Length: 107
Image 1 (tube, rainbow, N blue to C red):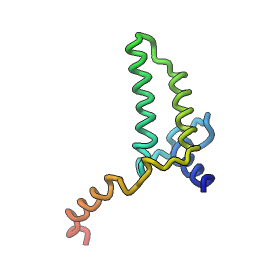
Image 2: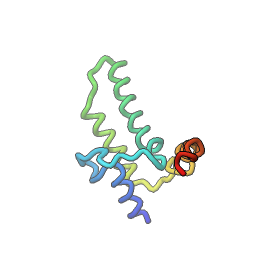
Image 3: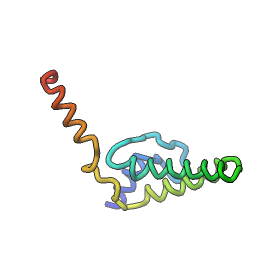
């Protein structure tokens, strides 16, 4: 099961090995990926930019890319399912609300 989970995580995010060039090729914003994968990646970026601004140094893109790749590869190879609970998704209540609102037009 770990093998299949790793493949699924890889296909949904990095599409290759640690140093691949197809970053976000299959970007998906579901099943907790925003909270568990994309949000922490954005936090890495924002932290690196703020650090550069506060120190007066130029943004070190190479160092950021390395930290980002480390995070991505660790996430792909993880079996930690916290944050990936699709049941907590906001999509279900929104879909239900939209269905109720437009039900008469659909039928």
